[in-house]
Image 1 (cartoon, rainbow, N blue to C red):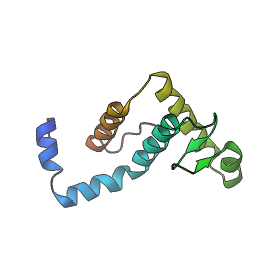
Image 2: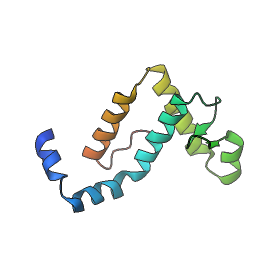
Image 3: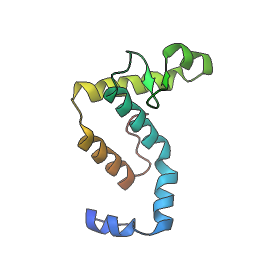
Length: 107
């Protein structure tokens, strides 16, 4: 296993390793993206934006059984907004997640 960033990047340069990393943390990456979009596009409070035109309201989440996850995403998006996180911070979070698969950031 790599011990510094440079060796980690070399280790991840192989296609099989990249695929393995994405398989291990795709859900967390999607959660971070949803929270970032929620902050970036000024979504209605209590909603999570999953695309430019698509949001999940609390009612929708309750109806399809994902109210707990949606509330966690809303809370994480509120935290990002409170800390005034920018795009560079989001990229750093994604990088840290990719370099340490298995550790949950937001869910």
